[in-house]
Length: 331
Ligand SMILES: NC(=O)c1ccc[n+]([C@@H]2O[C@H](COP(=O)([O-])OP(=O)(O)OC[C@H]3O[C@@H](n4cnc5c(N)ncnc54)[C@H](OP(=O)(O)O)[C@@H]3O)[C@@H](O)[C@H]2O)c1
Image (cartoon, rainbow, N blue to C red):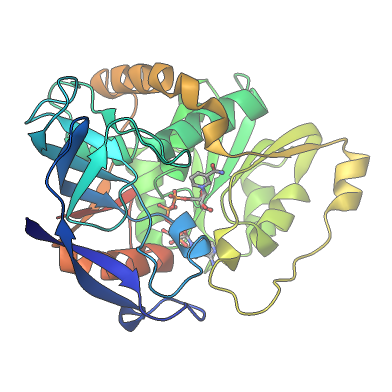
């Protein structure tokens, strides 16, 4: 028997989460039964949805991690291999490789991507990468020469969306929350235009960058920014609604200009999605994106916070926009 640590909700979030809203608890780990493995967390993912789906005091914080198998009673999951699994903010966990609880997905062995870091299984070669790939390609079908706008452009999902659109021959405009992010998008990721929504008028900046309008909008943020993009769409434009992070910490119902008249007159199509829709195809996307990374066509960046005990800081920092690319914790 050994003791593991986990973060639980000490008080429900009001507005922006605070470090005191979390507490560390210790838990006894049981001895392994047949079909079980002991996982030692190496990287924990902090993601926006963890802000939205956390409603109960005492609940363990949710989220995926990359973990090393340190003990195994399953031949398919040998000691030393790594898995991606939704184990929450825990440093050690005993799990069944075939979960008995129908709500839990089985752990997935991390494929061998050669020199690429394991943590990418939480970012570009994980759920956020799949979100960018399918949310852009399957919903918006971007064509060469079209104008693609992405909000939350310097984050885990947005930075990959913009680069995939470039790979597909589109003109790409990114909207992000700092001058440093704008510089990174333009100078390193090859975005055609980018601007800081905190310092410019989004509608005016869009009119300058895309005088003939926008064909595709990948929406990570919702709210006023998104209404401004929708108002600048071209006839038969497509909008992929991925998230609305501008509202996750809001304490009042957010208001934004009405978009329906633009949608009617320009015959726009808007579709929301959950990335789990394509879970049986994620592998295909990861293989293609790993190849793009090796060919230098797709770049990734991680903002790494060191230390399990600093996971709440990493989470709060990500919600504040302190991350470039994917925010992860190195346990
Ligand atoms: N539909 C799905 O299946 C699915 C799956 C994964 C993610 N998502 C959604 O995709 C979006 C991006 O997720 P991610 O993992 O890539 O996170 P991320 O972009 O890496 O991190 C969150 C970013 O949100 C931005 N932000 C915070 N407050 C904001 C505000 N008030 N207005 C505008 N931007 C704000 C910050 O960047 P700035 O500095 O630019 O403000 C911050 O860096 C989220 O909405 C998330 O919920 C959806």
